[in-house]
Image (cartoon, rainbow, N blue to C red; front, side):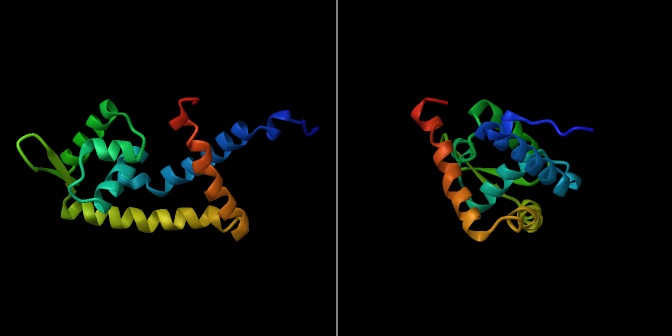
Length: 146
């Protein structure tokens, strides 16, 4: 069977989409027994690192729209991983429960293994270049061009 050439291999977006698909597939597999979507895991981790944060702050930190945060937070609360506390007359703060803290710690442990599987494939200098370049590409969204 002949190997086809693929001009798409020279496109940044194509290469990033393919790499992201591999990374996300491994991420989902790594946390599959948590019965949580990736957005729920990342939300839990942000809340664990930022006790008494607001739902809108979490959404902004992980680039999830306010309307999409509502079911994520509701599910985490329903599972007993996150609790809301009233800060003042209007504001509610989010904090992980003891069960949420335990789940977050285990998620971080597994994510470290997941990250190592990919980071170890890159030369340290290349890894630093990639980590420096990706936020630059994400900043296009802040400019309104995305």
